[in-house]
Length: 268
Image (cartoon, rainbow, N blue to C red):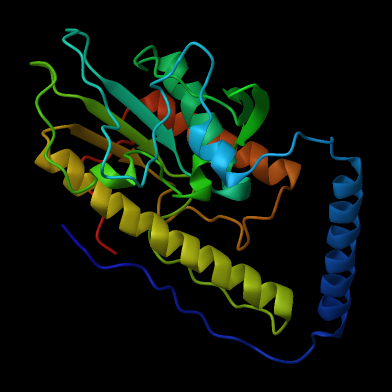
C-alpha cells in the first residue's frame, strides 16, 4: 500500500498572455454577474439558527440524523438481515464526471451492476418545537471528494454484519496519477491548476484511508478511475460537447467490459 500523496508539479511559462488575461478578466466578471443575479433570484427562506439546527428532526423519523465527523454516535446501524451490504460512491470531477456517467451506463448494460441507491442533492423538511424548516443537503464531495465511509468510522474495526463480505465500489471521475500540464501565467489558470492539484491529492489520501478501512473490516474493495495513458482536458472546466461525449463513450466501454476495477490502489 502506498501512503504517498500526490503533489503534481508543472512548469510555468511567461509571455504572450495579454489575450488570456483579458479573457480571464471577462470570465471573472461574468461569473460575478451570474452569482449576483442568482442571489437576487433565490427564494426567501425561514430564519434558522444554530440552536434550531441542533434540535431539528425529520417528522416521524427521530433517529435518522447522523454527523459524519462525530465519533461519539453510532453512524451505521447493522441489522441481522442476510442481504449483503453493497455501497457505491462517485467522486467529484467537473467535466470528467462524463467518465462516471458512461461507466455506470456501461456497467448497467453489462447486467453485472448491483443496485445501490444514489441520491441527488435536495431539501429535507425538518422541524423543531412548532417551527418547520427546509434544510439544504448538497453533494457529499463538499466534505470529501470520495464520500464512501463517514470520517468518524475510517479508523474503526466494525462488528461483522453477516457472513457475506460487504462490497464497496468507488468510481473516481478523474486520474489518480499526476498529469503534466504547462500552466499559463495568469491568475485564473494558476488558481484552477492549484485547486485541481489539491483535489487530486485529497482524493488519493481519502482513497488510501478508505482502502485501509475496507482491508481492516474485510470489505471487498473495488475502484476505477481514468487510466494514466488516457488524455483528458487540462482543466476540469472543459465542458465541450465533443470532449464529454468521447469521455462518456470511454467510460461506457470500461464499465461494460467488467475489467476496469482495481482491488488495490495504483502506485504513483
